[in-house]
Each structure stands twice: as C-alpha cells, then as structure tokens.
Length: 568
Image (cartoon, rainbow, N blue to C red; front, top):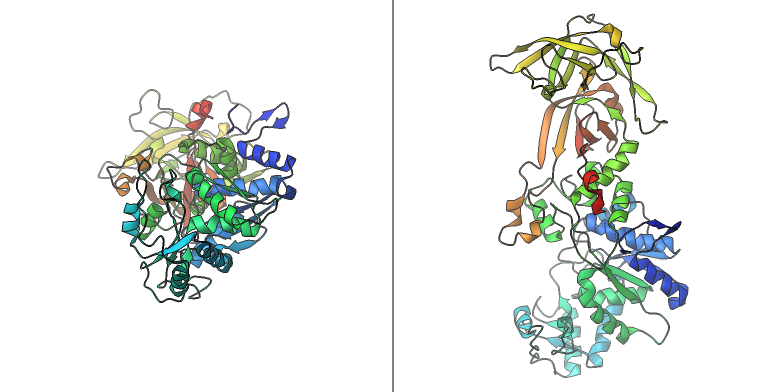
C-alpha cells in the first residue's frame, strides 16, 4: 500500500510514513514520550501552497498526538526580512485553522548560537576564513574530487577567536571574512567540506535586534541548534534537506548533553503544482516587476492569493489529504486542487444569477410595470440553505452567447422560433431581434407562456434549454474578474532555455466590466462565496464598494479531474 494515501481500512485510518515514525517513537518512549514540532518559515516572502502542506503536517502531527507546535521564524538574514512578512505568515496560518503554542525566533538564540560557535573555535572545529565566496566555492571540489583546504584552515585558535569577536564588533566589511566549520574537505558529502556557519552583515539592521549583531548564522548552523534549544522532537522538512541531515546531526552531536533527548529530522516530498512556480525568488520577481497585482493576486500560488480568489481552508486541507506525504518528489496536477475547491463549494455556495455578457431580452406580451417574485433555491445540495426571491420583469438580461441568429441543430439555447425555459420562471419563444449599424444584436424579443411558470402543474411542454437571467430594473452592475492559470506550460521550471516570464499566460486575467447580478448580492460581504448559475464559483473581492461590486472567479464549473479520478 502506498504511504501517500489517506484511506480507511477495516475501520482504521492508515498512517503515512511520518505518522508511523511518530507512533514508533512514542511506543519506544523516546524523548520522554513528548511530541514537539515547529513550523520554521523565513520572513522573506509570503507563504505559498507548498508551505500549506508543511503547515498541515507540522501542526497536524502536534494536534493528533497531543503535542505542541511552535511557530519559529528563521530570521537569520536581515538583508531579505521584513515585519510585513512576519504578520502575513501569522495571518495565513490562522486562516488555515491552526494556532501555535508559542511564537519564537531564531534570533532568540543568537547569543546561544554565537557561544556555540566560540566553543567550536576553541575546540579547533571552526576557523575564520578571509577568502571570497567565489574562491571558497572553487575550492569545494566536486562529488568525485576532494576539495582544497583553505590557507586559513590551520590558523591559531586564539587568532580565529579574536577575529570572530572583532567581526561581531563591526570592524570588518561585509563579505571580507566568514566563519567556517572545520570538518572534512575530502568528504563525499559536499556539505561537510568546511561549511560556512557565520557571515558579516552590517548594512542591514535586523527587524528585531537592530544593530546589536554584526555576524549572523547560516541556516544549516542555526536550524538544528534552534530545534535543540527549543526541545523539538520531530523536525519535519522537505526532501531537498535530506543531504543536509548528516550536518544537522553532526552539530547536534557536538551540542547535545548526555541525556535521552535529541531532535530527529525527517524529510517529505515538497508540493509542486502544474502551471505554477513555487520559487520565492520568482514569486518576488513577479510582484516587484508588477507582472501580477501584489502577493495576494488571485493568480499567485500564495495562501493569501488563494484566499482572495475564493479558496476555503477546508478545500486546501482536503487537497493536502488527497496528495499525502511521501519520500518521492513529483508534480501534482492543478486540476486536483481545483477539484477540491469545487467539492467544498458545491456543498456551501449559494446559487445566484449573474449575467457576465448581457444582452437585453424583452418579453413583448408581459405586462409593463409588473414585477413577480420568483423563488430561487439557495443550494440544492443543502436542504437547510433555504431560498431567496428574485425579481422577474418584462425586460431581462441574458448571456449574449445564449442566443444565435442562425443556430445549428444541437444548439439548445435561444434562437428565432425556438423555445427555452427561463430558470425558475417561464417558457419563452423567440419572435425576433434588433441589430445596430455594425450588425451587433442589441435586443431580443420573445413571448412568454403564462401557463408554464415553474412550480405549476406540468403542462406537458418540454424544452431542452434552460437559461439564467436577471431583471434589467432589479439588478446591479458588477465587475467580474476571470482568472486562469498563470503559466502556459505544465512545468515552467523545466523550461531551462527560456526566461520564466516568457511563459506567463497573457489570458490569465480577463476583466468584464459590464456584468449584471441579481439584487440578492447587494448583501454580500468580502470573501463570501457564490455559484453563478451555469458559470462557475465566485467570491466578492475585498476591493468592492457599495457602488461597485467586484467578483473573482474561483474556479469554473467544469471539473476535468472528476474524469481522471483514477490518478488519485
């Protein structure tokens, strides 16, 4: 049985491989029976859907096994970090439905990390190097060739101690010196070839510690030790850190005391989606170059982008349960994510009428000035959802594409001399139309049959087409934004010979400014979800105003994944 399936077998939930590890550790009494995880984002950008997978795992393991999960900001690089990102990360985690036990920062441990670095120098396990980053990289060698030792590798301990102290006092320029661990320049693991563990940063104050520190630890040095200082039992990270694990364990072995506690790093597959990029650098580039409208642009794979587009926390949880956690990287069809939101909104979203490309329909035999209140069911999937009223009048709007002057045989919408039903109202028959000087249809004329009102005894008349509509007088103007996939190719990261910006989909956003929606939507609040009849799922954008409703299309009604569910 594949470990990435979350299924029920003989009444018992199967475990993914990480849950199996946790249960085995509990059974063996490791770490005193404690379970503690952490979610350690870098505050240098907004969280994306890949982070949501990690969040669900880190917080979910703690919840399931009655442990604790801390939110720890890996704030070791003040050049790229900002309080804006700290605030957005907290908001995203809470929106997903999780709450941390405590907020901590790698910067909380700067003194302990510095002291540990000093201890390594004293034990001749670290030294100050004055070579440039380029030279150090050249000296690293290759996986099949040993590296070249730095000429500073064997400098006296006291000299390195003095230089490291002066580095932190701001005596030296950024990039002029670094502190390296002294391990093995011939190791088959490239990460053991005297990795850099501290660098000088003086030109960028830290968002929490200001100018107190002039040297900052590298991720590989700070991460494992922060886990240890906190008491983390299960350090869960993505597969690219698997080759870093021996270094993680090496530093822990030098740091840990003689007790039964040590954190354990376990790796799982990261989330990659088709038609999407997850690189923070590329996402930042899209924002900075204004190729999208900010981090929360509904085309972005950020959590705030999905929220603005109309995704629900439950749909993201359901999606992550479907894809599971494995030890094998791959790419997930974005259609599965879209399927998850359709499944969720199908059960929750009220059905309303909205005409995105309106053309006027006049019922010539309907009394002028008459207004009927038709019952509209809010959600046929939810018997408790109730109904609301929609006004029916002589002049209506229908979708322009629902009428053809010369219709093919299998066109089951409106055409001259053809009949259709107006949803929740009457059967009508087209009697004519009017064009402007450019040949564009301006008005359609029809007659209604008063004996065919929805809910009346069956008249025996059958029509194949049913159209949605809104009243001209009793409807509201609206802007509708139709979002599509951000990239034109399935896997932009594989297109190595092209700038990823060349792969952007020019039709990823279409803005329709002349839409009409039923009056019920004047009650809508930002982020409220709706199914526009026959069109898709939409939500009210937070930029909406009383005089201008703006709706974002979350997803269309067509579900391509439902046809290939065998992929699950």
